[in-house]
Length: 353
Image (cartoon, rainbow, N blue to C red; front, side):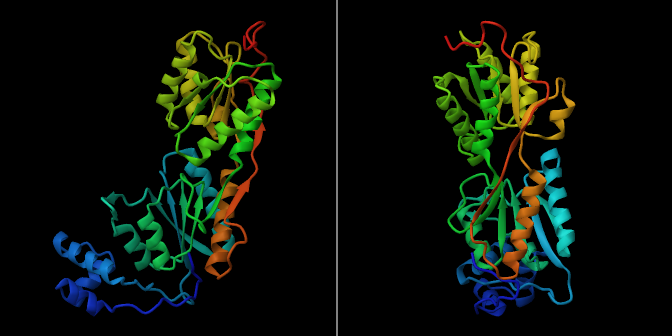
């Protein structure tokens, strides 16, 4: 991943060569390159395949000396408080850097092994100087595409382990898992379950690893039946909690790997006539506004979402200026925020048996 704000792009085939290869006129090829919609699908396909075969590199169509710098922010969705916190952090840091932000929700999907070109084409056409990806899962082809076009990018809380050399910013998820579990252990809980996210996601695996480490350090036997994966989905977390409650020896406390999933845990407990924290203590993760709104207010591990986003933007600016960060992975600290959802276990219920 090599890019500077003023780096020149290696010479490649001209648009005329691409047009000839695809059997179209140069203006038609130009429409495809610039993301225009008035091109027949079959014609667009031929031009796109010719662009791929010949390795055509699009040149930004803006004068960096006259136009304010543009940075794309690609978020998983725009309808969550998580995204709001990320947007807040990026906007503040971009204002300080004199940059403008273009926000997109979601990524181009793949068709077979080839990514759709629409979003990336538009990114090049509008002259974006860099990209921030939040909770994104890029394909190998998409990583290669960004590198081919020499566009710097930074991952905010990447879903999967990024390839070597890719710059990313995240939270200290392992430490957060340790902190949440140690808090419950200090209250006297030993039967502690975890409602985790996706099994293959970096952050979820790290939080579960922290949970297991804290139990091991306390000499508590790890129970596989106490580990339930809910894919960061509130409704699935609700079902997984019911499964935990149906165990012969249900847990007295649960570490939930996101605040949104904790809402599902609360619902399941209420359906069974159980209360938080009298019947079960609950610790979340994120410290989203929902953690303060629900009753009782949720004890949770705060990850600094806005700070993560601002840090990613500042790293991206350095890369746009030709500076390479010394470390490709930046982790910001997490901390426990104690509220009302945790308490000592009822007498006689904390023992692991």
